[in-house]
Length: 180
Image (cartoon, rainbow, N blue to C red; front, side, top):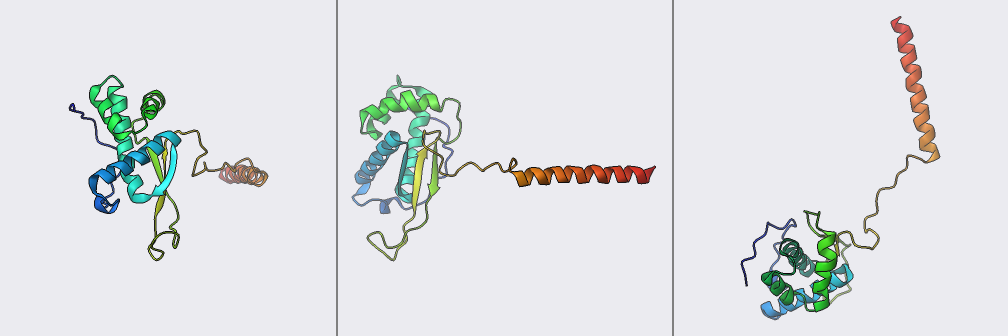
């Protein structure tokens, strides 16, 4: 492979023990990451276990960063894409959809949101399992965390603002009369 250098990723790196993510060694871990990367690039929002999805997030960030920097004509970038992305139609999606979407974006290209801890639904019911939602930024789906609502045009707030303005003008008029 060619020498691929790029700036550091802008996501925090969890210090989880990688051997506990999947059994079967490094090859099984790579296959799991490839499968999750394929789901993420295809669906743009996925849900899963925090350890595997946090690690996959780093690979997704790296692949998009390299695709942005070098393009689809660079041999090393294409070799990395070919290795990490199992579905070859997703490689085209990365270059045709994600690279144009993130051309003016410097920061991370994915978001992750922690879900409530679930007990009793998995192999070991007494051990809590933390899941997250991993998504590509600027995806077509509704936001997970909604935008804060604007309550300024509600009737009570309009009336309170007008009363506040009236009170301040009266107070300023009284102060001006006292000063004269």
